[in-house]
Amino acid sequence: MKMMKPEDVQEVFKRFQNENPEPKTELFYTNPYTLLVAVVLSAQATDKGVNKATTSLFANVSTPQQMLELGLGGLARFIKTIGLYNNKAKNIMALSEILVRNHQGQVPQTRQELEALPGVGHKTANVVLNVAFGQPVIAVDTHIFRVGNRTGLAAGKTVKEVEENLEKRVPPCFRLHAHHWLILHGRYVCKAKKPLCYDCLIKDLCCFPEKNLKI
Image (cartoon, rainbow, N blue to C red; front, side):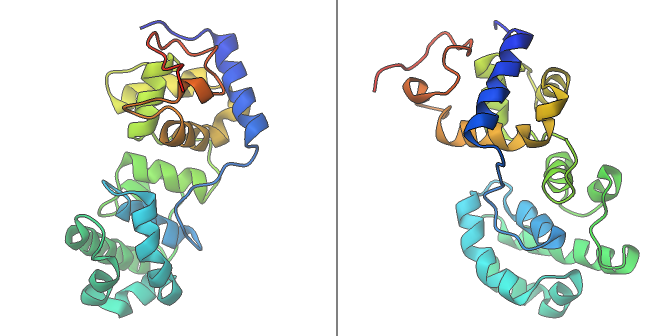
């Protein structure tokens, strides 16, 4: 796979920034705790599907203590439209209990403490650190994994490899928002089956040899 030149990587993110200077997550949340819950729920689910469930949930619950008071059955009723909701509900109740018991009801701001919570893996921790606390980390999901490999931005056989290569190649001045720019690009332009290369902001810089340039 041909790799994008460093100067082209710089240009890619410059264009993303010019088009969307302040990208935001598409998950609905009201504070770091509800963001954590939303990201846990989003595993193997769409943001749109999660938002349909959490809009009502977060109107009633905004803290770990309120979640514990709602109870497992109450939470399950709100999120039953989301895939794997039973396991996710159990994890959310367990992490809420830990937050109340060990963290004064606050979401911790270190990856180690976040990953110690039930249902919270490396990607989830990175999303919370980036979105809630403004840390310049990159959470690699299926969209970013595809974009990184397809475009030549940052190739890798595993999610971890792509993340490490992005951290090396994305200029520091763009790193805070890189996560969102790449997700949005993968979700709406650089799609898995039919990438919209003809409508792509970076098609002249992309190293993908099979560009779909016909509308």
